[in-house]
Amino acid sequence: MVSSRKVGDALTGFSRLVTQDRVNAYAEASGDHNPIHLNESYAYGTQFGTRIAHGMLSLALIAEMLATEFPDTWHDGGNIKVRFTAPVFPGETVETYGEITSIDDSNGRPVATCKIGCKKTDGTDAVAGRATVPLE
Amino acid sequence: MPPPLISSAEIGHEFGPYDVTIPNARAESYAEAVGGDESPAYGDSLAPMMVVAAALTELIEELGLFSGSLQTVHAGQEVNWSRPIKIGEKVNATGRLSANSVRRGNHFATVNVSYTDENGMEVGTSSTTIIVTGEDL
Image (tube, rainbow over all chains, first blue to last red; front, top):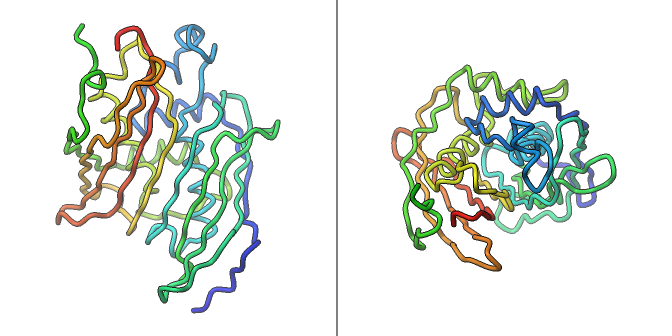
């Protein structure tokens, strides 16, 4: 199969309302019950002043985008590298995004490098970085 | 209370192995937290990020970062994955501290993690960078 992907192609992003219920469920899934995610009175005394979502939850949303966009290859040689640049507070909506910035086919298996991330509604990046994904 | 491990751990310090086998109930919680109409159909496979998150929780606990007096910020994350993992499939995670420095009173630490299946074959790697602040450091 020859991939039809090309540099400049946008990945299909999606929006997600990050509710406290989602944060609670993520705590159960990951085992991370840090009170900064779950306990409002504790979180009030932190630098954030309120509860924040797990950074890995936002990263998981980006990975969902990549798994949907590259269903046959993302889990078979995919790489992602990100910085967590702003906290996401329960009740905020984030939107994932991505774009293919280069394609390397020098090793016989084409690999796309993508700029990826998720933004808050004010345009602030919550997570930003890049991913590489085999195309075949 | 003794100081957390991050105060004294040297480069090369090893963590684990942790059993990060994900049972069905946790996979369902993950889908509840992350999923939506456009989510991929995983079938009986797991999102690798869930395995990474489970290992990260173990690491944070061993580093002593669940202490109420410490504040930990997840600064960076890298993940490589080489094959799908099934729900309930045995996976072990072992970590190694690759950086641990103090700047302006903040601890900056990076831990590299290798994930192996029941045959000892590596199925993924990750690298986590955290920043920790607190009076107990």
